[in-house]
Length: 207
Image 1 (spheres, rainbow, N blue to C red):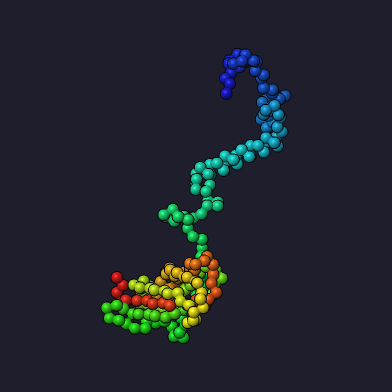
Image 2: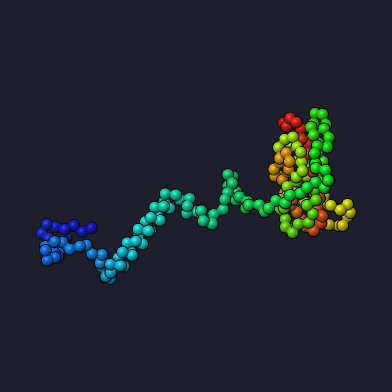
């Protein structure tokens, strides 16, 4: 900013032009008209530029106040270990035991607990990594000691299929178990009548 001297001249020695007064000797109202880069802006243009500048400052202040907001759009959720979190799973398909009788405890073995053995038929699937809920259980705990799920060909006959499967237990509850079936030899679905054999050791005192 240039400083002005008392003799009504600036540092370059130029005379200052006194402000005009109206007929009553009062100072005129401030004008929005001005000159920027040798261009005169009207009142409407000046107001528009002022509004745009204020909006820009407000957006900048909001971003600085919460830097995480700038990265929210298009970002992927991560786990505490820094890995990209999986997208929400597709709908879980519920399966009932192949037996007409629900899969209650088949036998109690002293020192071990209740033994439950049953089977489910998920059948063919058009996609891989299918999630199933195995229902109809009557376990005494939500965290059984042993849960084994064996993928098996539903028809007791050798068709020469090269399918290979893996099954992972996701959650357990007294009335159901959620598992994910993954085909390993190819990243796709399967056409065979797949069967899942379930074996659960459900002790009364779970270690």
